[in-house]
Image 1 (tube, rainbow, N blue to C red):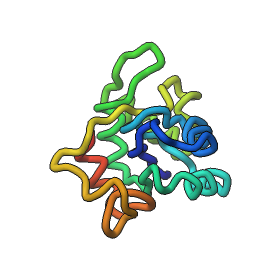
Image 2: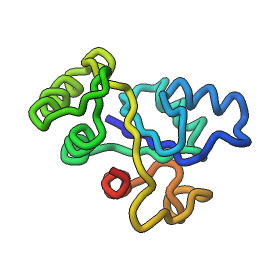
Image 3: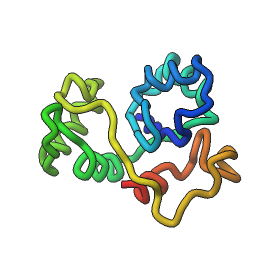
Length: 140
């Protein structure tokens, strides 16, 4: 499972990039979503790689994300037991919407700041990020 975090704001984006970000449910800055690693999703990520960071999420970070930032459609938070059930269903291939959850998570800016939001991963935080779990942990 891939986690995607939007790092760029809305001002000055091309319409094509903005439409792709909207299809990924990344409508605002510091919003994250979960995706399958299908060919179509990877094509969209390559298109917006200079505006987002993405990588593979592990189970501990996913559980932490769901318990802290996961919301049901009514606006209620998830308990740890509910979050564990959601992880099992996500591994089977279900989507967050089918499970009654909002398809995105709101985050805060990372503690201790960014490397750079204008350069790709080895020098900055954009693009495919090898340490995405560490960055996501600082943003939750």
